Length: 423
Image 1 (spheres, rainbow, N blue to C red):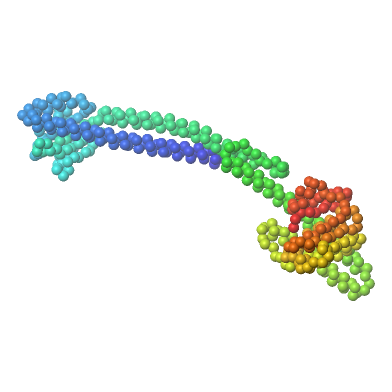
Image 2 (image 1 turned 60 degrees about the vertical axis):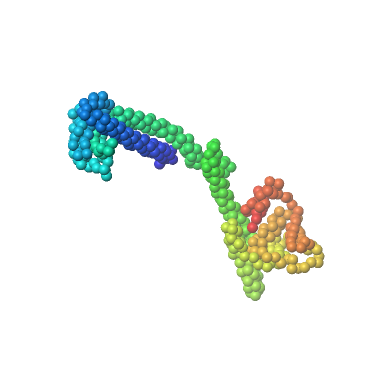
């Protein structure tokens, strides 16, 4: 179900339901009030009649008839019966209306039960026990509250009309509100459906003053951005893997070609042993990639005490197999220092891969067949490695991308793209 229809149903059913219950409660309360008010009128008339009977005992019948003629038009239809303490009838109004339950009501009345109220076909019937001037009387009155029922009928019609009008108003207002609320959501859904995921630089934009919609739009753009970054990272990772595997594979091919030309079996065996070690570097590269994935997942890496300059020497030896004409000049600053400074707690696989990338780039993009490496241990608590060559530097724009995952410089001068990025 569309959210617009859901809002419409929820708002209409809630407001109209509450209104219906409220109007029904008003009608019930007014109906109860009519009964109480009419019963009080009947009780007052009974008391007044009894008082007149006591005051004019000898002329009670005539006076009561006069009172009855005077009050006969007060209600649409009415019958009053008055009994003495022996429950003998001493007064009956002129109306021909019959009280069917008169005897049962009369027997029910007593000092312990001084009033009985019931109804007979829309007529209100009231029986009372009265003590006046030390005299006991019983009275039963039956009347039709025409005025009260007219007001009740009028109230019912008014409430029904108001309910219909209010319901229509609620439906119209709910339509407007549901459209107002659901429009940004529907627009966002349409924009998402039509969104061009191939255009990575075009964020989703929705004009709205609703915080939730703005937040949802921002989260969607963030999700798209992260997804695009993941795709780019995947592509660069593949490029990086292919780039990194070229070096050890080239070393193996070169060494195996050299071994194939060797005549001495012992020399061949030694060389093969060396190549086994070289081949293990391929597994190390895979391990490096796994370590990088651990970094991405926020896991803690294992660190070991490693002498940095020895690692650099090992890398240079491996690279000299491929680039025998390139030479590195290594110097230490200062000339005398505590060699313990060269030992660091690091992840040796990742650090070796980082140095290998830097040294490979130093060789490939150097305009001369030489480079320099300075190991600076002058400051306590830090060790600096400076790798320098002569050649074309990367642009200012590309310098901003140095710490992006597997960032590669644009191909220039027919040379392969330079690999930077962090590890």
